[in-house]
Each structure stands twice: as C-alpha cells, then as structure tokens.
Length: 149
Image 1 (tube, helix red, strand yellow):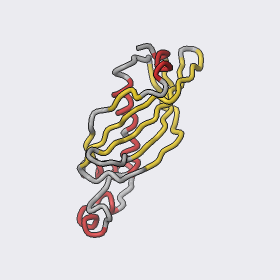
Image 2 (cartoon, rainbow, N blue to C red):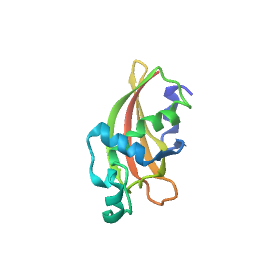
Image 3 (cartoon, rainbow, N blue to C red):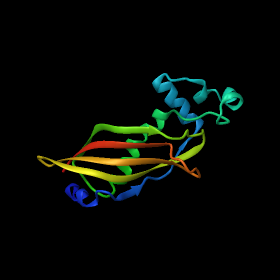
C-alpha cells in the first residue's frame, strides 16, 4: 500500500512481528555494547539467589531497541517507502521484566499519520512488546518515524 494510505488505518492494529528470543547470550552482548553490566542482567548465579525474578532479566533498553527491527518487519511488509527515519519516542513504559530465555514480539497499532509535504509522512505507532505466555507486556511505547514516499 502507498505510505499515504496508512492514514486510512489510524486506530487499527496493523500486525505483530515474529518472536525474538532474549537469551543470556544476547543479554550479555547488549551489556558489553552498552557498558551496563548490572548483576541482575549478567550474573546468573547471583540473580538466581537474589533476584525477585528467579534469574537474570533483559535490559529494558534491549527490549526497547527491538522496536526498530520489529517495526520494520511489520510495516515494511505492507508498505514500501523510499526511506524511513527514526523521529523519536513520545512515551515509553517498562511494564514487566523479560526473563532470560523468554520470547517477545511487537504488536503495532497506527496511532497517527501526518502529511508533512514533499512526500513525507510522520507516522506514530503504538507498540506493545508482548512476552510469550505472560499477561503483562514488557513495554508499551509510542514511536514516531518519518516515512518518505
């Protein structure tokens, strides 16, 4: 569908991404990349003893970082813009921790589409990062992206 047609879908869920596993190797790699080596993320033995979650959990920002690839997966299978640029976040809430080894996926709803002229559309999506088998999502976030038609 053309980028401009997204406006016809405001208020609708447009799709869900495939599942992504947040295993300990990915969590450790994220810790290495960001320098966030807090024990609750990387020390499995201590987390098993002391964490209220019974083991290590993924960084909230690791889960947040999945919004881009999962958003591309869902949206770019439905539309084909020339390019997309991250424009920011409106609101992010970390609702529940993601225990190491769990899988997450992003459910995306189109919240707003603003035509900015010159083939540019500011698209706001509401993203719910679900945790497989759990009632509460990992996070809920409003994401803004500039789509070029």
